[in-house]
Length: 478
Image 1: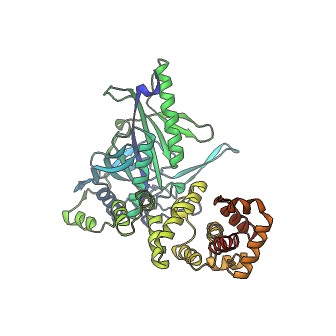
Image 2: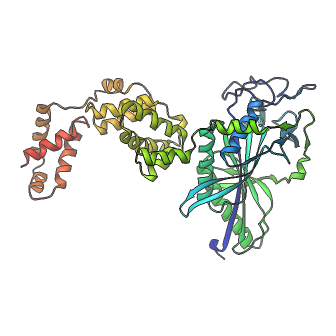
Image 3: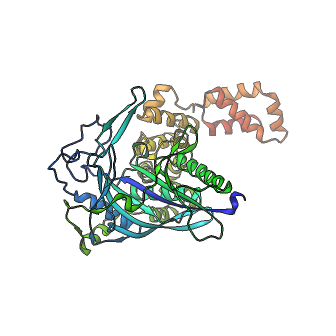
């Protein structure tokens, strides 16, 4: 049998670190990048006699995420102890939520090549993050950093509604975008603020019973998730085709070899021996509390996209790219407001900025320059101070060493040549050096003019005014 004879069934468990200033059960800061074990206290280090106190902001952010993903909000919720041995969680249990999550029965709508599709969300619950083990291959030991222990998380569990890597990619990007828009998480994947556990199973087409699933843990790169799923699907089909049995297990994805490796047997809920957290009271929410959060929700990606289509008359594709990230969308709006040329701002973001982000695998939040610098770049081109080709060089500089674009072009000597006499001198030089192209143009081959202009731009290292070049070449070649 071939791969086309199988249906893939996938579900995701997404962990997003919440952007609260302090941890979920203590007042330690949550900021990333501090020296190991400096953001810790007796509570998050689980010293005997210490008691947790729930951070109210965590509940608010979780409810906000639930409302933004069309969830029902539970007015009666609680915390539970999830028991398992974890070397970087000092309590040897995690405070999470089991049978009474804060949010449940939601969905988000994604765009695919087959059209729109609703992906169900089973639940969103709050829990604490674990610390981090730093492995030392030379000594063969590991050091524990507990700065992350107790950082608040929401876990967003999807229904097993995903069937293709395209759907998984679209779902994760949409979910990330929503969390960014409502500002409950910075979703910095490279810092582990947004990561996914991917559950994959296969079954023969036409079957209704779900196959045995495997789980790939803590994946924080869209590219890696896509590669890992493709590999795991192929591996499971090979096992079944060779009369083997899929084991329910937790897997680790290895980026270098492009393969998954078994870490341990996959636990079921009963393995965690959940019971209500005795040190925390139940979470009771009023209708008024929930409605106040609902009223405070900002403009979401869909409505912002619709506004771009109606107000700015952008294409469906461009509006979709801009609104896929709050950071790109905000950059577009602020830069457009400053320079007054939204079309040019849109073009720069959609083409060159997006290309650099893709090439460097950089997240939009990491763009090192601000809206005023982008607006200044657009204005310099509009005024004729620099050409578009020089603008591309300025953009590269903005990514590498952000500063005022005007300072960049002065430092580099990139100010556009717009002097008529200087332009004419260049035009005559190029005409003299390219008699064949001149003959081609006069013989009716219009493309030859583009070649001549290109040679002039090359001669001036992109600094000549292209509009003036086109006009002067046409006049000289009559």
